[in-house]
Length: 291
Image 1 (cartoon, rainbow, N blue to C red):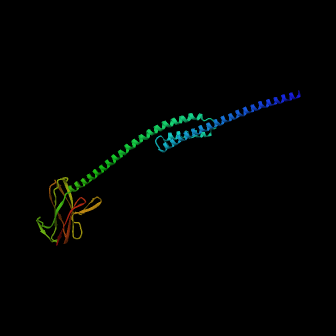
Image 2 (image 1 turned 90 degrees about the vertical axis):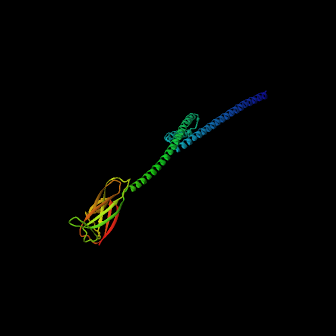
Image 3 (image 1 turned 90 degrees about the horizontal axis):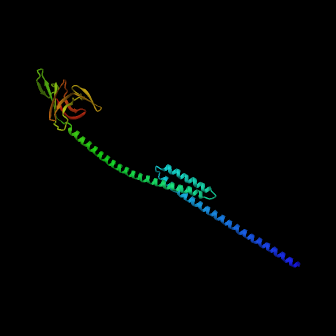
């Protein structure tokens, strides 16, 4: 009887242990399964985080390249780039689900595409404007060269015309005379007998010269380097000219003979010099000798 009771008790204990064992195994299995699920969720979250960061980094790189081109949109591009950098900081700090950041990422990506399209349009427009500007510069440069060439040609032509329009003074003749009280003029070569010099010269005809009154300044210098006659002064281009007398001629583009008398006394023997000036420019010169 006692053996039967002992056997029944043992079976009951074994049954209880078996149930506890099975319960433990079920709990351990469930715990392991939950752990795997948590690890899977954490791994998935980390992968999504890396993906979001990678997309944000690409956005930043795109903005950096666009900003480096220094277009008129640079300030706007910098603002959008800073938003991307700010979101990257938030994602890096996050420790949970990053799905909330995906909407912001999509918004920034769409904004970037719109801004890049606008920036590309501006670049194409700038390229076109630059091309037009360069073409204009080339045209203006060529035009400037042509104008400079024309100015040079006109200047040379003006010089030729100016040179050709100058009047030529020729054949200066100088003679000494003794003028008697009766007015009779007697030619002489003796200085002591001379009381008047007769100076004559020819103005050659010139069709392209300007007609009208022409004044010449005649300078007669004796053997002692004294200017004879009126000894008046005129200044031309900052240079003083002392002259003996002036001769004004009505010029009508034809050859004109000019003759003027220069009275005086106490003429010295030696060589005399006659210079004819057209204003301050020496037009012709000659010399003669009194004994």
